[in-house]
Image 1 (cartoon, protein in one colour):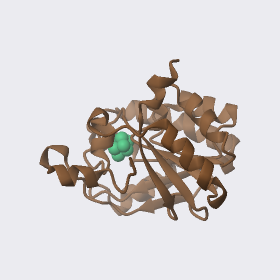
Image 2 (image 1 turned 120 degrees about the vertical axis):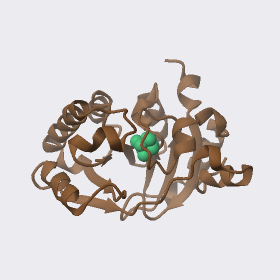
Image 3 (image 1 turned 90 degrees about the horizontal axis):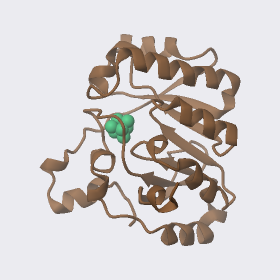
Image 4 (image 1 turned 180 degrees about the vertical axis):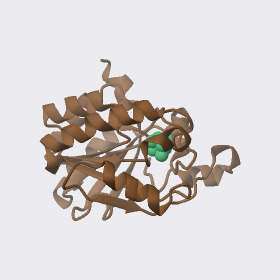
Length: 224
Ligand code: SF4
């Protein structure tokens, strides 16, 4: 793995978030690119047009972490979809050198990567996005994930969570397509003992509809 190929996904940094990791003031590192095409994606430019977003120099991230790590309680790695980044293990290994625990946001469709990162001890908490009931995955992911694959991939994640309950949290975004009945179904999918968190839906801003200034803001408080 060429480290440059991995770090070229580094597209943004939120210096301080009080809500991405409940109870832990953290920074948020954004990696571009995603394997899904959710019509409700709020970070569509980062997910689907990574090359159209300014790259954040690695040196700048390291300088930030060197000077601010003592004020933070963790690092959230988000996207896009971090598990789709070639060399994500190397990235997390380098970040972990700053002594802060790492939370990783994931759509759960790369359980092999999640399993490897868990085994390597590189991630303290996987925040798993459960889009909805299995049979709604094709619609909720823009046709990127079949019901069969959703069931298979999430089942592997749920099995990992049963072995390491403290390392997983599950959440669903309340997109308009989901009913209360759907949420009940999702809660029933989770392994015993897990509580489903929900987060409010923010309507997406489409890249083709953005002005230049809007496009810059779409990165969502990102520091380049
Ligand atoms: S998985 Fe997340 S980042 Fe990827 S398209 Fe869906 S909402 Fe966007």
